[in-house]
Each structure stands twice: as C-alpha cells, then as structure tokens.
Amino acid sequence: MEPVKLTAYSHGGGCGCKISPSVLESILGTQRHQTQFASLLAGNEGNEDAAAWRLSEEQTLVSTTDFFMPIVNDPVDFGAIAAANALSDVYAMGAEPIFALALLAWPITKLDASIAAAVLEGAREICKQAGIPIAGGHTIENPEPVFGLAVNGLVKSQYLKRNNTAKAGDILFLTKSLGTGMITTAAKREKAEASHLAEAVAQMRKLNKEGAELAQLPGVHALTDVTGFGFAGHLTEVCRGSNLSARINRAVLPRLSGVNACLEAMIYPDMTMKNFNAFKAHLPEMDTETLLLMCDPQTSGGLLIAADPSCAEQVKAILAAHHSYCEIIGVLEPADALTIQFSS
Image 1 (cartoon, helix red, strand yellow):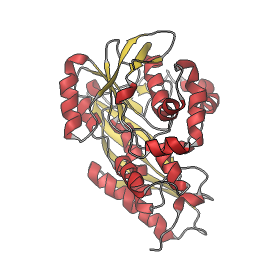
Image 2 (image 1 turned 180 degrees about the horizontal axis):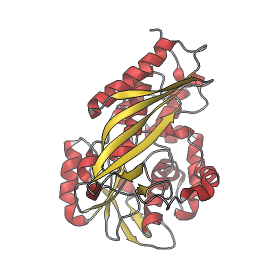
Image 3 (image 1 turned 90 degrees about the vertical axis):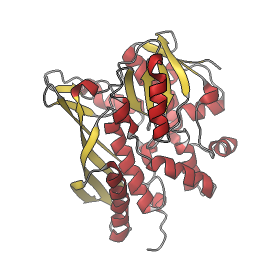
C-alpha cells in the first residue's frame, strides 16, 4: 500500500475534534436528566464515560460509543488508537468489554477501500488484545474519514465506578503522560520528531485494562479517563460532581518526551484554548506552559483515579503490573473557591 497522509483529509483529529465543552452543554441542555428509567444507573447527566444499565442486582451493562477523524497518518495506527480510545470508556467504569461494533465513514472517491480495510485491521488488533470481537457495524460515505467503535461491557454491579463519587482526602493518580494533542498537532504540521510521535502512538494504542482491576478495590472511589477536554476538564468534572477541590503537584504530572519541543515552538491544537475557556473559572492562575499542558486534549488518555490513601500500595501494584505511571499527582480536599489548585 502506498503511504497516505490521512490527516490531510480531515480538519481535525482524535479527541481534539470534539465539540467544545461550552457548545456541547448548549446542545444537551435539559436532555441530561432521564430519571424515569429506573435501570439507568448512569446516563449523560453527569458527563460519565459510558452509560450503565442494571441487568440484575448482580450485573450491569456498560455501553459507549466513540469515533473521530484521523489523528495519525498510518491507517493501522489510526484504527488501533480509535479502538483503544473507545474501549477506555468501558474500562473507566470498571467493566470488561464483551464485544464492539465498528463505525466507519469514508470518502471512498478520495481514499481507496484498502486504506479503510487497514483501519479496521488496526482496530481488530486492539480488540484482540482486549479479548473481544468486532461483531458488526455500519458504514457510510462521507467527505472526511471517521472511525470508531460502539462497545458493550459487563461489570458486577458492586464494582461499577463513577466519576462523581470521590471523597475528601482521596489521592489522585494519572496513568498516562499528557501531551498527545500537542505532539499529533506537530506531526500534522510535519514538525514532530519521529521518536516523539512514535512514543505518543505507542501510548495511545495502550489499553486501560487496569480499570477493571482497580474497580474491585473498595478504596478506589472514583474513576474516569482523560480525553478531549484535557486533564483540567476531566478533573474539574470529578471535583464538581463530588463537591470537592483538587490540589495538584505540577512537578510530577507526567508528560510525553515531545511536549517540551512543542511548548518551545508554541504548537498546540485549537481545542486547548476551547478547553481553557470552558473551565477557566475553576482554574488558578497559570503560566503558559502549565495552561497548554493542563488543557491539552488527550486521545486515548490515561485513567484518573481517586483512591483512599490506605490502598495506595495496592493501586500502585496494579498500575506497575500494567506498565502505567503510578506516582501520586495530587489530593482531593473539601470544596473551595477554586476547583483546582497547585501545591507546587
């Protein structure tokens, strides 16, 4: 197959092409509350990662969908990243995926069908790692390439995790490094070093499988994954939903190797400033470097974990076994005037 620059066929890429948080809020409006469905344990009212439907007292179905335009040029990597990103929503609620459906929109007159097949190949690779099939799906013709998955998973009802159940005193973990938005933007502009892009791609392809194990720890009070709204946005959702504030140690926030080069060149995606404008009322004063890192839209980002300090070593052991970042990055405190503050 001849090399193709997939990112040239779309105006955005990855989770950086999401609708901005403020516009999304105006779209959803009053549609967030669906309390008439007793079995709907989690819907869209709390910005959860996925919907949760109680099948029985013992078992809950977790269902999600996620899709986006190419974030990298290689079609296999694009499919793999999109699959890992969609699966993450299920893991972030403590569930194990059981099967997926593919969603493909393709400019068939511009990009050969063999390229779309390579995208599906990448998705199958990741689903095989997750131990599930792509059992079907749907395709349409579209001016820009779009791919993603709808994923269903199961979790014991007692282990279902939410993003709004954190407690004061909980410590925070973030399992993947920040900076995928900056590095993939640099790559689209042909200004990223090959090694930096390779590191970012490897991280985005990595499954957040540890979520299903973490959920079984009673001391893990809340889980979510960090994606298009950036670290600041998803942490704000956890804090506001739980009526808490967070104190973050900037010195230990993990970042990909190529981030510093992007910061020096002031390369960042448009979504960064959309995130900042949506969440700035909850953020402290920041220098430019911190702002660009905190608000960088992540694709297939890490899990954000709120856990009681008593289970810190158990959490670290699970994260280490999955080769994930396992430093404590902050602590949750009673709600204050600012939702997020810095300890250093």
